Amino acid sequence: MNLAELQKIAAAGEKIAMLTCYDSTFAKLMELAGVDILLVGDSLGMVLQGAENTLNVSMHHMTYHTKMVKNGAPNTVIMADMPIGSYEQDNEAAYKNALWLIKSGAHIVKFEGGDKRVETARYLVERGIPVCAHLGFTPQSVNQLGGYKIQGKTEESAEHILKDAKAMSEAGASFVLLEMVPAALAKKITESINVPTIGIGAGIDCSGQVLVVQDLLGIYTGSANKKPEEFKSPRFVRNFLKDTNSVQQAVENYVQAVKNKTFPAAEHSY
Ligand code: KIV
Image 1 (tube, protein in one colour):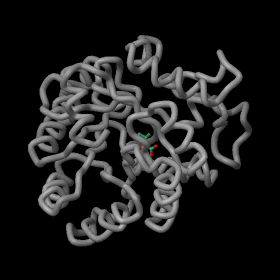
Image 2 (cartoon, rainbow, N blue to C red):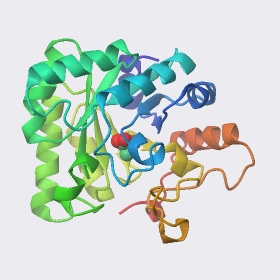
Image 3 (cartoon, protein in one colour):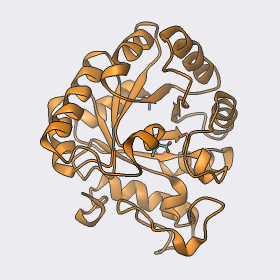
Image 4 (cartoon, rainbow, N blue to C red):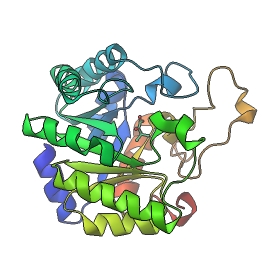
């Protein structure tokens, strides 16, 4: 599968199964399980480094983990996150950093933000770098957004996210990722733009789904300095390891659940 084929299967109604991945062991396991896209997410700041957020992740971290994932999954589409500070200042710096991720093994880069980032998306796409736009809850803006909160709940903010998704798709983005938005809004966006949407906490009607692999396995219990009992898993998470004693099987079950549209259920949506 390449990006164009993934867009084609999404247009034909097949769901895209995406998971975060940060190393070669999991990459190989996920490739064998049929995961469509491996996301080297800057969530690695939380789930690998133990931080409270993604704000200390660097380009060096991202390229290091992208190379590992590429080693383990040479035949799967790899999406890599552009970390905070690597794309906002100017388009040339964004291009240089995106190219570094591509040379490390990524097929496509993802960055956060809508209207202010449309020209960056266009700039990268015009220079041959595929882009995924991350909208809705954008973790790099956690301090501005006042915490991990659902976005697009008011009519005005829903309209804003829809407008951003349209602008990003028109600028040439290959995918739009929607995090923590009402399912009805994600459905409307998916029906309104020409590229697939990937949801996390965005309901069943997105063209595909993504989860953080540690959440899928039920092994993430919050940042390193917090007690596990203080951690509450987000609503959109389902533990796929619960019903099997095999990590491989849990990942395969996730892929199946996404493909046959049994995940996410209403209980995982807003
Ligand atoms: O970094 C990440 O893992 C992400 C997902 C939450 C989509 O961006």
